[in-house]
Image (tube, rainbow, N blue to C red; front, side, top):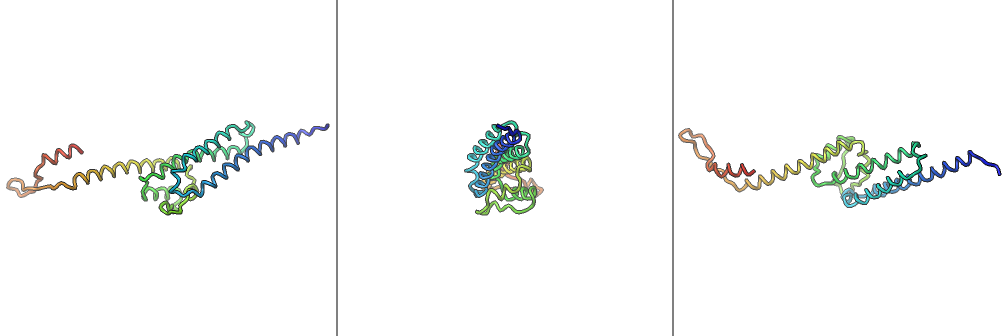
Length: 194
């Protein structure tokens, strides 16, 4: 029987390619499926998406070592890792503390085009098309700032509510006619509590 080493090598490479591109097909199909998820439904899906991506990451690590030097392997691995990095960001971006002003910052950061996140037909794909992984650190800073601003806004509302019922009285200071705050003790006490 005649041996054909080139043919045997090609057969092995085709087997490796089949494994690599099989995983690539699975990842691509899953991302296409996710692309149609409405933005309003993303939060409920993130945990499942993270599990699926972890499964893909495990599968890519289990591929034969010979594939690691191939460019296609590197592209697939980076795609999976980038998506895994973006998933927690999606949770942060979907928080109620994200106001229109924060989305304007994101629009400017990622290309200037409007992101109609309040539109009922806005999909995950419309957001993911902005290559969020590239801007991950900046986006995390925007989300953190939004969360801090929300805390400040809540505290301001509490202070406004507390002071809304107070009536501040002024009386003239001695014979100068300059008005000063009357009943300072109560006001001082409240201010010290705040």
